[in-house]
Image 1: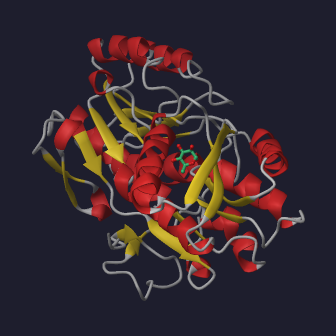
Image 2: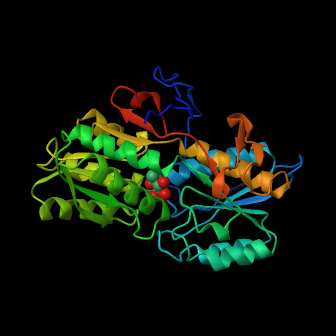
Length: 350
Ligand code: RAM
């Protein structure tokens, strides 16, 4: 499968290898954990409050998707932006924030769900009170949201990660996965598909362990240390979470396994730059989280304005990103994953 690089835009330059270019450079706040808001007036969605609820606060990935892309979009259509959420990514940690937002009568919630089911009854109450609900990044079950804005196909994300680790370890040997929270819908879907890819196309790679760092830096760091200790023949780690891969890289960087145990997965260029440059990591993948939040905000606006209902074939325009059409299962797709290496990483700043 070949990945084109639609919609991820380099800050400083257009990526030479990109087929269509990638948009917008997400300069995000760094690790701020306070709710923030932006106001505007006028326009069809004037006063539309869009509340973003990330898996957890203080995660640079969500700083880019929410505080950068989401906020920009909401300001463009002159709505009101808010971000609230739990400090840790636990299954029911988002429930109280959903309840409060619904009580405040917000027009739209944009949620990366910590669990496919735990937030559902709160979401359904909000929906029956008239709030439109868009999941993005990590979905709930389909009956408790109007739309899911998917960053890339799960198949594409899984295959990219498996392809990268296979290249780096000569397609043979033991690997492990360092994931986010055990209940995360997105990581679990990717892991299932990675297992299928490995079984079908990489008979000499053996997945020996899957551990969970809960999208917490220290837990992910400690789990990396434990993986290396428990599996002395480990040749590679896939971490399909920006928090996990950054913590694993930090551990490997100063350990005797540096250069011997490969690490790939999903990371942000700003968090991974040092490790790509010093040889700890050869390549990793992601999409533009700022574009993802921007698209999710415009999808929420289209629902609130009644331009779409979320059914297959509905289409709407998401500002600078252009026109999107709702596909099967109420899903809107941002684009393809993009692979970062030492040769292109300096063209990105998010
Ligand atoms: C972390 C979160 C998020 C995921 C990225 C790749 O920031 O788990 O949900 O999409 O990694």
